[in-house]
Image (cartoon, rainbow, N blue to C red; front, side, top):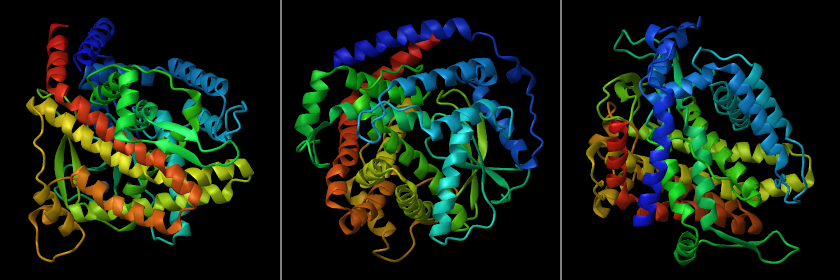
Length: 479
Ligand SMILES: [Zn+2]
């Protein structure tokens, strides 16, 4: 553990060196407060986007890159080359294929497409756009009503949850339909990094060469054996969390190409669910019941915040439920519309494993909640008593009637991630028992293993986080 701590600190030194040189001066957009959108709904959101980028050096650096079109195009070209050079294992053939049409379309849109504001990350925008169209098809298939399609965008925030940004903040009343759903700019990157750093803890082997059945050992003993054998696992895990919190720069290690197909399906499902949850609110016609100030920075001294709409816990849990239904349908639609037999079989095989990405998402949310607490207070969060958990869970499941202030409280925010996790788990496990083929059930061990091992890695790393974050903050002050 001490070795992990020291390695991360030495990595940190390296990070702060390069950071200090580039970003001492505020970039011009942050000084002059320029906005450009002509869409009145986006006006308030665009200002919030700019403020969110400008608040930190790391954010300003991201914004500089975002505004530099030629740099962005170069990065996108490189991404394409990297994808092309890896054997595409989606169909498990190991045959090298050229980039899929979807990737081509996405990269083209990010290079040439229109975005609603000056400070919108184009790649993120078109990924959301892509997910929305898949979810829209699923919604129609499920015959769920929706009158007005949502507007959306992204901005850096310290939270995993998306928020609704009102179009006008001058009144107390927030108009739910005239608003923007804002996703965390780092969410999609985080949804990729976390399963990527945890996948090497799983021991996956085929039961025999001819069948699709696999054997996944995700026992704690095996995970600990893998973690001990590869010290980078813990480092990469801790770095992914620190990076999401804006406390570290982007450092990434490449992953064995054999994991590509699992990683892509799993990451996409996390991202789809995040969008589907927001869709759930609109389908259920959930009005914003309150407003709150969302802190824009993980820096405890910064007080700049955004005005965002909030909903009740009950509404959040309902949106989760609809989000799960929508993701199930999107996965079904994907299978139904895939003509290539091998590819279709691969999608079927992974369908249940991909559903477990929802639980993985909530587990990551729990980790970030803990890490943000450590960042704010400097100490480890207290464990919630089992009795307290059982009470809230029973209440959420409607096992007893009556009022609870947490469920009535509309001025608060989302329910705790563990509660969302428990409720989603019941739904997914029921679905698996009823609908999954034998092969898909066996393959779901990958999704389950990722969830279990995310939990295990956090248990191992959390105790060093108070000291780790304190040291990082100390160094950033000196810098
Ligand atoms: Zn919500």
